[in-house]
Length: 289
Image (cartoon, rainbow, N blue to C red; front, side, top):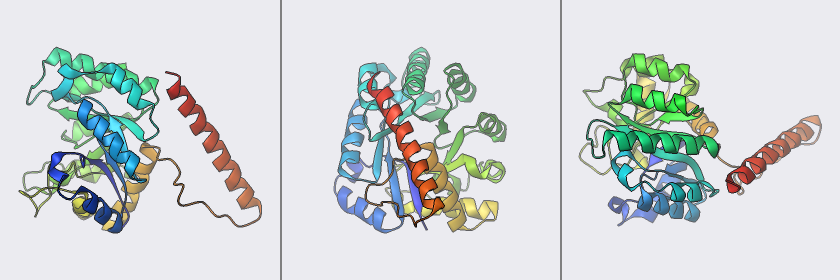
């Protein structure tokens, strides 16, 4: 089973005792890529440092609604230019815990959504009991590439998100007995979902109470497969392809493409050249911001 962990926090102190050993085990167990997500100044910087140490780990930069009072726009702009940073996030609104004033949350989220659009980066959204507020801000920013991480909305909001062409991501919470996402999981199109652990948080059943890690990601795939009457391998492959496309993962320098001679080879080389040209233009655009 080939897996793509789209939302982890491996830089946190929870992983201090065995971080490098765990990362090695992840990559030896079928996980090919990990997106390590920042949510304030410290974690954004640490996520980038971690990504620079590991070829298949990439990072995000952003200020979570809980940390909105500490928002540093210049830091986000600086880190957004880094080649290892693939998204702005996690950013959004949290009207459940209310650790930052509503007005500050809205302003900071809107600012970061606009920065993501300016820098041509996807947005990883934290949304808790603020569905329509999040939707409104993203629409006003004209955001195109959006994923609602750890999706918690109902089927009506899910359809609203999907109609925009945005993505939905699921965590181990879907394995809990009180999960209400079965209908959302069954109705979502194949091309609009991803899977994550949000580790060290939200360990899936039967690991509740333990530290979560990417090693449990397969349990999320298996639960989705059960509900959609597909195989776990199918769900893993679909979610992998979706994540690879959404985050625009750069070519792996350790896995050069080998083509046979003939027209197909020429066509493939041309396509790669065009892709490289587009990526170069995007990179230059971000550096010039």
